[in-house]
Image 1 (cartoon, rainbow, N blue to C red):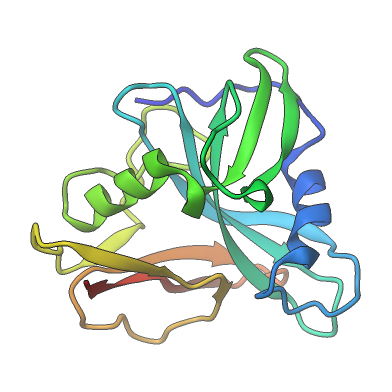
Image 2: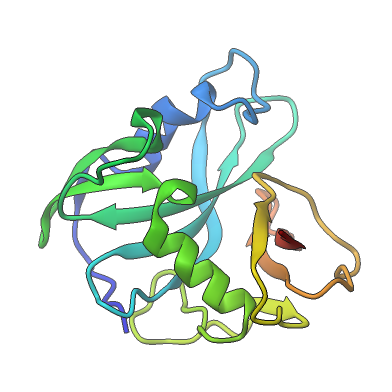
Length: 192
């Protein structure tokens, strides 16, 4: 199980995302500089214990309406090779672990492997900020069989009144600025 350290990161994840997020084609904030807060998410464990895996919901309140973004993050102690340069969100100095390379997790094979394992029912989501604690609020509706499949992440989140009935629909939550709890579809699967 992953350990969540109570320490500093310089720059913080939200500071790195403030610069990175507007460069993404799915960013809905136009030319405004994001005003971000972490409002939800969960973690997955790397079986090897080398890569940190977090699915963060970052809420942007800079525009007329708040926008919730799903940002899968992977944290490594060295740079990944063989992936696009734009996959690197940035580096940060962790108060315990030293320099961390922080990636958009869709480009990290460890993160994507553990997401596939979660959708097959072979991995347990963990609380975002508490070590060694499963998060029962993260649910997968109907696990996916062992067949090959692609995962589609919903980068801009919307509240879902009911869960999709398709197998492999990943549902999790976040909180709006007014304190309202929200749940929505984080990811869906499609056969290859």
